[in-house]
Image 1 (cartoon, rainbow, N blue to C red):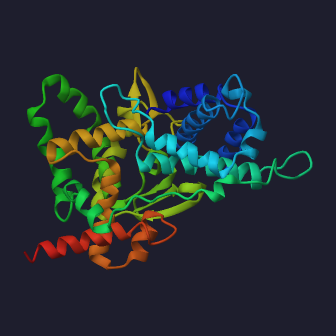
Image 2: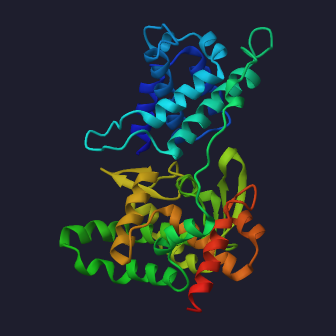
Image 3: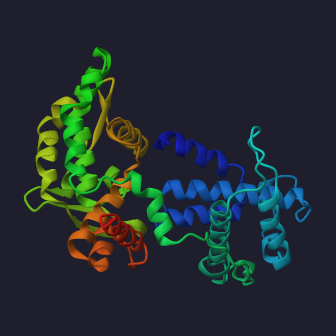
Length: 354
């Protein structure tokens, strides 16, 4: 979702919320939570508050009128009833016969509510310096993790990873073969953004940074001499990330045409730009997702920028056999998340012996 639309949606949801949720929202902007996370949380709060009214737990006329005491007095049984409602409610999709929402969605809903309750019971300071209340019912609600082995998860994404020499084959395909089947009109658009698109793909494949981290890069954040980029990780922490050397020519080519091609001025500090009617803007996450999907589908199979991140993790573990190093490169606080890349590496090794 483009940033402008995302912010519009956030404002729409904020206009529905009670005052304590608006305080929570403002507080989380300083963490900072991403706008995407806050948007998803506001959606979950709307779902929950509507249920409070529909079930008769709250006698408020609308969401904004729900009293904070309602949250304070919710019982474990009330919350379990809400989870049951999520599991059993009819699908909102007219053409679907599926009942309830997925476990992943339920976990996301409970995570959003846990964050709100933690704020209200621990983090906020009222006029007397104390939280608004102390009883946190969410601490009594457990989440059910999706049962799936690491091997199964690795198997699910195995066809969506560009491994080994496929990294360079993918870049070479975009650079030299993709344009062959394009119409003249499509070629014009492709030529305009070719260097930029190749630079973005090369950066993602050579560094493993998150999509949001790539989007937020500024010119000052890239050092091609050292092949290092400075990114803002989750939680707002700054981090220096190494890039593989194969990305250098793609980034140099893009930087050589960036200012003229995208009409960039001194105040346009974003590394990756788009240009519309003579006005340069920072490229958004949605545009990169569509771009990666377009090229990857034509090359092999449609993938996301996140799958390119997995590619780096897998290649790096192949070379180092170090989960700690992979975790550091990806910006993870622990090695748990990198277990998937390790599992996938083992799966590939096993297949070569068949």
